[in-house]
Length: 152
Image 1 (tube, rainbow, N blue to C red):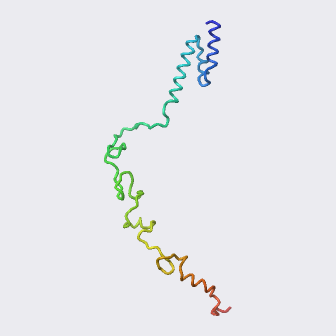
Image 2 (image 1 turned 180 degrees about the vertical axis):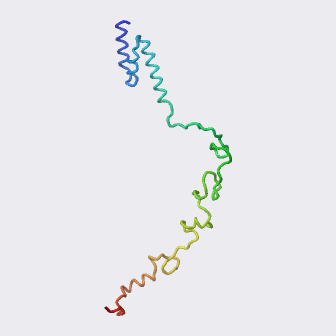
């Protein structure tokens, strides 16, 4: 190897990116052509690793067949339908569609089937905090001192 060629190789390798510089130096190329080939090969490997989609859709690796009805991989019949909305994939207890009011469990938290009104007098149209019966009693003040308290 000539001194001029060694200088050319050294300059060429010195200008390479850090990610492949060490690998090219470690391979100790004897000719300029060899240095270029090593560099090209390493750059291609790096480009391939960065070009591969890491967040892409993975292929199914299992052995179960794809069901044409529900588009899932499973053996046997599909999962049962929801009884509220007749859709596959969830049960009635997990259904987000509003259920019929005849189910006692569904009536509990939704307030369907219940008339809202005053809890003091039972009249609809106002709530307890606005009840005229309570407001009338508040105007009389504390009525505790009517001379009927027990003596000590």
